[in-house]
Amino acid sequence: MTGLAGAKGFVLDLDGTLIQRTRTGLTAIAGARELLDAIRGSGRPFVIFTNASHVAPSVLAAELRDDGLDVRDDEVLTPVCCAISLLGAGHPGEPVLAFCTPATHDRLAAAGVRLVGPDDSVDVVLVAHPTRFDFADLEHAARAITSGAPLLTASYVPAYAGADGPIFSRGAMVTAALAKVTGARPAIVGKPSRVAVREIVARLGLPSRDLAVIGDDVALDISLGNLGHSHTVLVQTGITGDSPLDGLPALQQPDESVAGVDELVGRI
Image 1 (cartoon, rainbow, N blue to C red):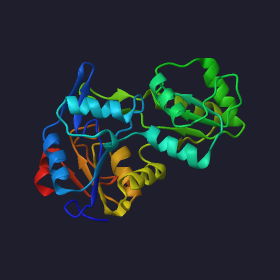
Image 2 (image 1 turned 90 degrees about the horizontal axis):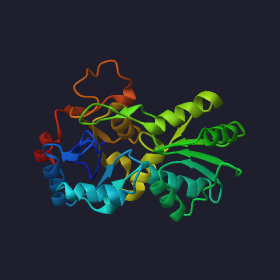
Image 3 (image 1 turned 90 degrees about the vertical axis):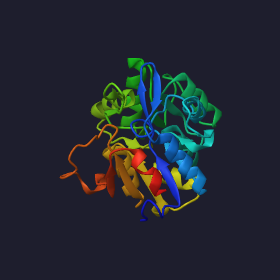
Image 4 (image 1 turned 45 degrees about the vertical axis):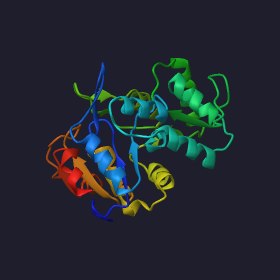
């Protein structure tokens, strides 16, 4: 594990850490632009890892650039990136029933994932961020899971930070329904998971121990960083806020906590 100044690369959360999102758009949090500029100026790589799985990283990156954040397409990572890598390595060519947006469906298909419908044989069930679903699809997925298909989910936390309060996770809702009726334990491919740690390492080309992970959620970002033995920094601008950290499990304990990313700019 390395400290913030000695980190060779950075993993940054998005919502509640760099931006606040409302129904009308997004706004950069104080210090977000300066932090990204400082990291880029240091010559060290970074990736913005968001659990958002409804659109491609390129779309998210374009939104950030529109708001003045200097982010390239390849500097945004989502659970769908992790799922594509996992399916390609562990389930090549296997039929996958996916609960996701049309944009994510097209992205998975373009990456070579064999997507099937409710009348087809299913070897893997993947839940991302569905905008809608049919109960027949849900039942078909449940029957596949009870027959041995793994249940993969982009995220299993109930909500993430929004400017007007928590934004509830539709993916978690669908995953919870499938877990309840099948008794299956969902395998997380986004934050926090070892799948995600491997994806970060592959993207940055650095051991996870040499990274600093900065985020607002102890259950997502801090747990992700601790899984990889990275240096973890909790910012209080998001869903965890300034809640007491005493009594949290070791996996959720940050190495340090700051009010916001503006406090980190001079330490890069």
